[in-house]
Image 1 (cartoon, rainbow, N blue to C red):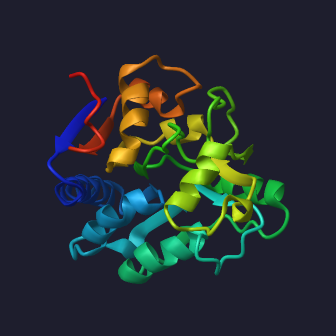
Image 2 (image 1 turned 180 degrees about the vertical axis):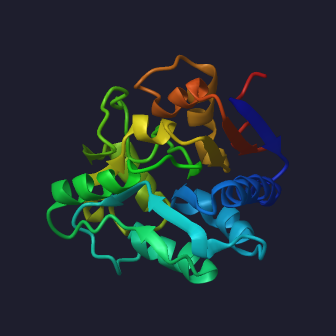
Length: 244
């Protein structure tokens, strides 16, 4: 795993977008098709803005999966990750191949169906963040490092739910769903390349725990250190507690 540190989140976003574009173009040149996992949340704003501003990617041949979605949340809710991806990625690029987690009903069936689709071929690049509690996707601590299922139904812990309120997606923790569908840890790690975009001071404690502490389900994103081709993008604030 490589850690890169930038002065601010805009420089971080630009560098991560450059690497993401290179990974997508490489897959498109070699196979005529690219498969990508896209993260959501406030940490991805600047990165996605920089990536979607590019005009050198054939997005028509990019197939997208997303990491997670709240169970029971309508697709037009301001906090819906489907809404996030429609507005911040799909509408700006013209992606026509995407697989949403439609969670209004039968989440177990949705997890199985989209799981079969993502398992059909390797993922070229995954864009991920990490939570204030160290979660990877919605795999809160203690995360399941063993499941081979591509998507899991998970319970969201209080720290995770409070983060969603803090980012402004919900007015109060009582509004945050208690469960979600999340891509599993092992499925994330199957991506050929993983770009980990983590700006902001509020992530500094999680960054230190995940990248300098033990590799443990109690710090879910720590497992990224076992991936052979993961790059972590930090800014001055998110890296502030690192000792090296």
